[in-house]
Image 1 (tube, rainbow, N blue to C red):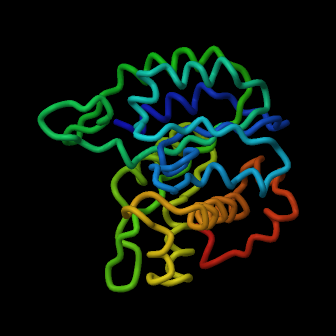
Image 2 (cartoon, rainbow, N blue to C red):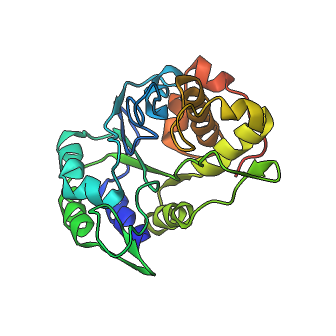
Length: 240
């Protein structure tokens, strides 16, 4: 299962808590430049809320599988040092593409391709001391009766991966949904200038703040690295 893929990555990134740098692995919703056309990913806005430097290694169009196939997790683990944090968030590109494998899909029915990530996990197992944080994918701008529509299965996969490896899980989907519902559908629509997935810089900052709220509600060692701006981000809704 995809949860086992991410679980292998997380299990291999060990858990000391001194903290030096925050690395981010994900797709266009996190990446610099987002999906293009003036959009941007939330990873570009996280650093203003932390006392640590942030290195955003998210790449548009990637799934957990293709990120692994391209050797990006290998590069990441060759880079991290003891005490670094690694935020892993995938899901938007991970679903079944149909009869023809698009090189990104992790799921075909209830089965999942694991070979590439298992290999990466073996490499990660040799690393020392980074702190993984599994974050669920962000919601699309799709509403049902005034609330953000129900999450896709990859949100549950992320939670399962975190629980299997006893690492921090941030339900980013839920925290963003709470923020958006508080702001209101009409305003949130302005955060999505080209489609229902990729945010404007303003929207990306709202999504980053939602992740910060997830940290503040949880027990991650990264919570202790929130700066004054991070600590000032208001809690909207409930901790989950």
